[in-house]
Length: 582
Image (cartoon, rainbow, N blue to C red; front, side, top):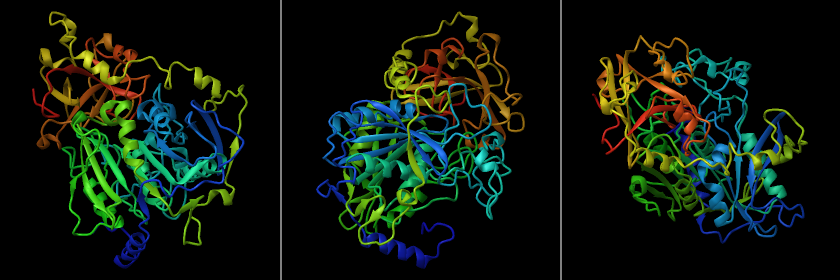
């Protein structure tokens, strides 16, 4: 029945009744409400992105804030909180999500939050350890493991998790399945919302959340724990960890957007194990189980049928959305969207992702949210961090040298990250690459991890992946017995995978549970060359491509790390199946 573990049927029914009686998510914006910051004379920087700092529960936290040029300090303005993926950062998310461009056009405020970074190990050379804590990312147990025994990585344990010693948790789990910070992420999100309400003219009925990958997992979590406050959420390639589904107390409109070829945070049964198990061994929840929990919480009954949910992007990258329009007035839909692609923002494109996300979010408002987490008709306040005084705004001088403190001028002038980057969008790079063929007479194309177009070596399998509806990529991947290679990790030494030839020493072998037939899972793994990427997920990266064998492209979206890709050879025409035996 979708009831989370530990809740009785009676308590579940009480929560559902409360939620249905409080079904105040309404279409339109007629019920907009001004925050206390309306009329403030402290005008923000309009039309540009600036970095902000808050001291939250003793931790220095930061985020990027974009207020549109059209902002009026007397007009209540919607707010979107956006969350990057694991080991990415807020500037990556601004580039990839496409929300800044949409915010300028539609007139809303967007805050790109940075997750907490307290992992003592060295991160990928172009990445961070930024992460979000929620939905079971640090709650792996023997009964509800977060990963398979062959997938755990001990170096993913963050300092805040190593140091915890409570009745339920003592350090990280022994399998190595705890993979984010244990520092509370929700208090930070609430602090940002409260601070924006205090300093800007915010429409308190139209506060939203979205995110990608780990940020999408966390957006699901926010939709559950802040259902009294947020009006809608859009997770992009996200889920809940195994055994940690949580449903909202109040009806929460949700649209999940996931690529059909996503092997990093799968939402359906996979070939890697029973249930949604990733190619690196992490275990997630089935989307059908998540929706089975959220639908009754949103007011759905047995009479509500699953139906097509139209958007302006239907058919673009094979996008198709469906779900149930829950609630007495059908105003709390539970929707999932599929598109032909992998673990990336919708369409591998900011110009597609941002408009689709906003199209859904902007439809909903929560008219009973008074501000600061206070709800009309309820005396108590949810998580009111303002009254607890657990945060304060920080202003750092420009001569600070701390890694996490970058002054505003550096961010605006930086050419290597941010919206002013000059690299081509990934979609254009992929399209251009389909027309560039490799030289068959070049002996360098007959090596390990080569182009399957020219044939694979003995002991290799030709594996193909759909990048989007127009592009397929393949590689000759060395086959390994499951006891011969260690799955996952970053630049893992002696993981059992064969080393590439000398010309490609900047690419590193990584073992993944990618197989072409489910029956091979128990006995087979495959090795791939991985490459460090300087650019974000939706942008082309010539430096990353140069780390791969001649003719290969460093393609993001196949590993947990946001700034690490896999060396693949772009193929045309597309191959129908994700995996194919040579």
